[in-house]
Image 1: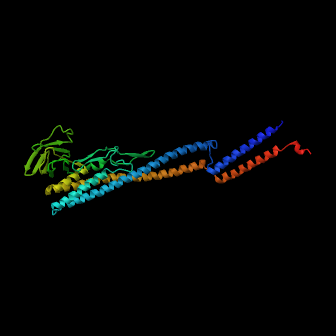
Image 2 (image 1 turned 90 degrees about the vertical axis):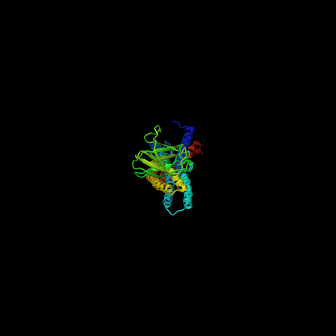
Image 3 (image 1 turned 45 degrees about the horizontal axis):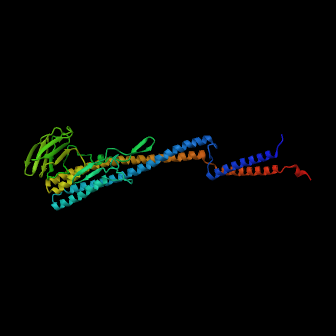
Length: 396
């Protein structure tokens, strides 16, 4: 077989290029610390590394959600802690108002203080997070949940939803609570009920006493007409108020007693047409606190005492409601912390697996780089020697 000069040059250049390419690969491995630079380097390891990288990305998303969930739960817990402090203070002032030696000016001072606490409670109930979403509005996070005022009453504009975050493949965790559950569902002690005047009433009549010996636990709504005339509706048995009950009315001076269904409720003051009252085992914290303020402002000892007793019971029940929610929030925070530990361990495991699949052994990589450099130099030297072979070099 004849070997031409062109073949010698082609073979030499091809060898140099091949060794140079391998040297570049070795340099990349040392520079990047990666053994697998392309799927061709190790197809099996590359496929496995892709799977592990995808799992790691999902795990990182769960870690991000866990951080968000932890922050959201801490905010809820902080706000509920402030609510608890406020309710405790209101209860203390309600107990204080039972002091029979207080003058009208002192009751007025307590009423002014409770008006400020009413506003503070509404502000806490309308708390927002760092993104401007209302914490206690349920799914309606862009709508202020508790609208209105002490004079006209507070209405809840949120819903019953609980916003959630997925913190693992199998766990979707609630991170907020409905304000309706916390502030509007406070229950009276067993055997008792809340008897409250409507916040928008224009008359001066307030509840000063109740007798519940025959109380069936239903919710009743009382409306005042001209005269005054009274109608009672059993909201539990008759939600549409289609069948009013006419109570037995007994009046003595400024005191009026309504008797219906084994219940009697005494009003002290002068009612106005359009006024309303309610009696039931469940009430809102704002309704009870607002009623307490009006009882302090009435100047009537019986009304003030009755309002104070209801405020004490209401604040106790509200604290129980808040404590139940805080307990659930605390349990979720513990769960998030536990899940964060699991996620952190998984992150380390994925990183270790990827390192085993992709990372280079530096000692081996540097040795390989030196070896490839030597091979390239050998290829270059051999090409130079072969390319210089000629008969003319041996003719003298």
